[in-house]
Length: 197
Image 1 (tube, rainbow, N blue to C red):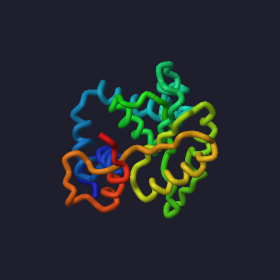
Image 2 (cartoon, rainbow, N blue to C red):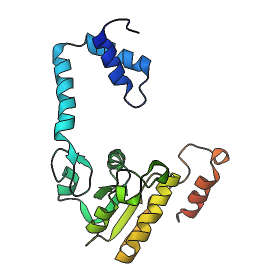
Image 3 (cartoon, rainbow, N blue to C red):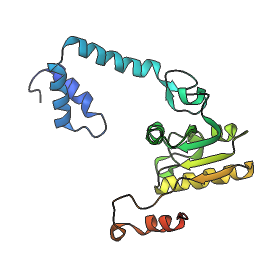
Image 4 (cartoon, helix red, strand yellow):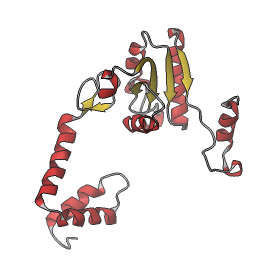
């Protein structure tokens, strides 16, 4: 039912298609946009246009980039003997924010999930195998879900004959949580991944 204008309703419908944006949030965003000056709207529109026209996948690591290869792959100060494999491009950002990793990345763009029709050939696993060459270590930093575990095991199996060290990021109990409320699988991983002090 049309309460205001067709233009407003179209923008509300567009915002509603975004993840975790419901109808109320979409309306708030739409009315926020209406209160902005033309310069803001033009810049916002241009940013969206650039997002679709300029952003592409890096031909090396498959992260999103404007330049190919991406800034990480083309940086001279990165350790090229270590590749960190992640599920999605936003995982690269999460790891980079820690300032603890100085190697290269490889983005799979998903995980093996037969229920959703996603197999190993739908991911960037072959491309990872082709990158091994002088690589000494592959760190599997895939989200700890059932699908993530299947993907981790599959990649480890594929890379095993290539004489490269295969590791996975540690997983366990989050800082500030209680053992009492931690599930068995997480506790098991925390015990298995224990470190010497």
